[in-house]
Image (cartoon, rainbow, N blue to C red; front, top):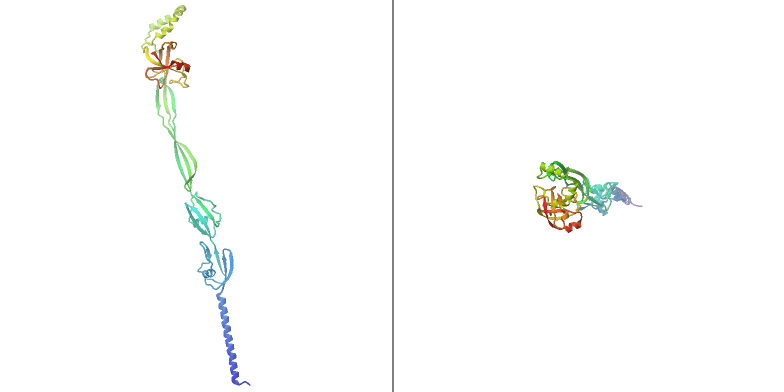
Length: 369
């Protein structure tokens, strides 16, 4: 039989084992509770890639470091890196993409996670003017790799002026002698204005548009009075008695007129206007149709000559004696034209054809007026 001492020892051992078991159970329960408290269930959404993580990390930053998750330029994370991790914490990472913006001769890069073209411009601190435009619609969603080109538009108004020539108006004046001209009103040029809208894209001209045209100043016409008055013809040196004698001579018989007709040419050749220049030597040339009117406004015709008006006034009736071979041209002519080469004692006689004018050449004549 076991002794009493052995029984007591066995009882103490049993009690010790029981106490150890109790303590160990408590420690296990406490440790299990601690472990349960230290681990957290976390949801990580990395730009659409979602995973569930059990972690003992205290902050978001510690979790990212543990799993070597890095953030790039412009990436957004929620909650912040310093935020503590709790049970059922949801961590969301939005990855940014690069957009390049070209404006004002510079290229700038920005990183955005979402938004429109206008949002990207705002992030780059680029402000559009009223007429500026971009290569993409401002309301379009920005996308990775986008290149946004901003075109600056400038407009200015250019004023051009153009002169308006004045007209020359010639009007008849019966109070001025024929051949006399008088300037009544001096002419003055007018002015026309044009407003042109010029458009520039990034400093380069791309368009011009006429927006307004007006007459800023009307021209003033030049007005010239041209004399039309012609004094009544006066017979130089004639008297009342001469007129009566002339009238009586006209009543002579037809036979007498016939007998004197053969002497008419010689009398005309020797007759001279009274109280005028008689038989003065002149140089004579000849001209024919030019296609232009004469200085007095009539078309050239037989019986007229061009003169230097400083020597022989226009409209003067003159008598010309031609040299041998050209006496058939002897007779009365009227000074109705001028010419640039006719200076001094020169007369230019009109003939009907060019051949006669060439053949005539230059000859000495006698002029009475």
